[in-house]
View 1 (cartoon, rainbow, N blue to C red):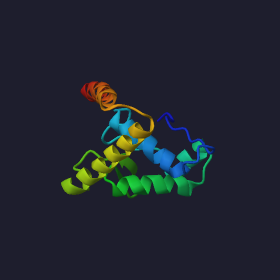
View 2 (cartoon, helix red, strand yellow; view 1 turned 135 degrees about the vertical axis):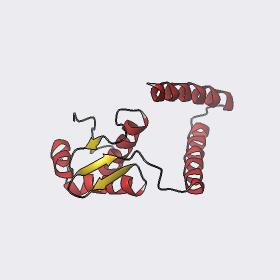
View 3 (cartoon, helix red, strand yellow; view 1 turned 135 degrees about the horizontal axis):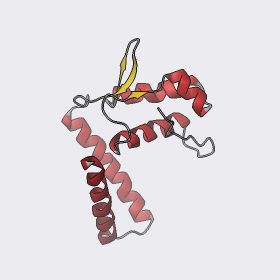
Length: 132
């Protein structure tokens, strides 16, 4: 598997969170599909020049969220099954993310109409990726 991940040690964002978000983006965008195998922790840690604990923490959190599944002796895979979080928990998480976007839009002086246009454009792009 080629390495799609890049960690920036100067970003101020913990490296395990950078990796976690990049994996989530790769799954959502279709670059990683259900049942795709991720590199072993040590292998990815060497490729990214980070401590293996960094990769292990990202994998572990993504497993708790139901995005990845670890199979003893086989590796870590993109989960293709049902989400582990209940519907209410997923709703709470997405609402929290939307609230963060709204705060950022306010601080960037983005109007409701502008935000709506941006949302529509991004939603169409995301739906197109899912259809591939």
